[in-house]
Image (cartoon, rainbow, N blue to C red; front, side, top):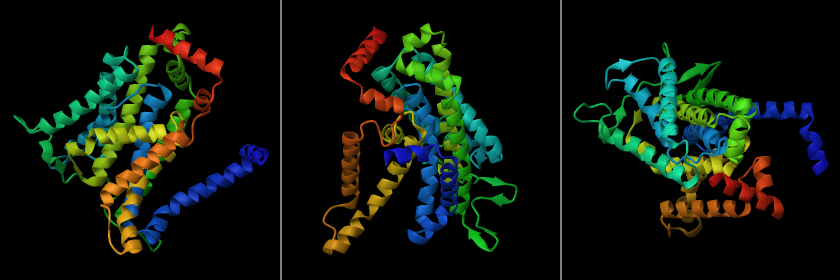
Length: 373
């Protein structure tokens, strides 16, 4: 069986067949979700794509470069607020989305460099604490920048944000093509899918590039990487900037999709959840990160039906669905950590590290000790 799967992996015809099948499935997925589960699940699919983009951005920082970032949601907030401030009645500015989205990504990238520059000599827990503080500082700033000059409108947030539109074609409206109706959530799904595929392509190219190999070298042993001639300072700053720009892009899309942003949408739990998507999916593995984002976005929504299930089985609701949902979610996370410690689809390098023989593990430990020293 294993030999058959190995032959299948190198079979070009099988690869193309799988590629076409996945393409058709993604094209009809909103129609299937709408028909089987309801229109709300098409909206959940939109959020799945947003979280895939966010997780792939954080994967550059955590998965490739090995820099633990607990404040990633701050870049998401920067992108969302740039979009909101430049495309809403708040300042009376209504720039088109194709100008505002890149501006949000660039602004988030600059913030990524600003965060990365003072933390170049930090690693592990210390870096996590600093990035966590950065995420909270951004949220508190957004909460309080309404006096003496009202910039962010404080806790009330910014509403009436312009939807994503080109001329008279707006994704917030229902459109008809060949007799088939495409509601707003469908339009956003296809637009987000297009951008997600673009980010996946960039991630794959980065992974196999000279920069990607430099990130991995820094992650494995920064001293050795520096000894080999890698400019660790610039490469680490580039990881922060690239990851942050993906977060800023996703934030802009979120603002255009929701039509409303407030500081409470960018709290610490969002950062933790995005990090969980990367860790549970498999750090450094693009397929794993995508699966992690899908799993952790869909599972909490699916567990909302726990109350309905209790009603159907016992005739009444014994446990609060909200509490039970989080309990089941926590148990599922623990089970995955116990039985898939390297993630759902770990990278080959990560799998080798966790399955290392005793002498190899000792050598790795000594290497880490030398680096810290």
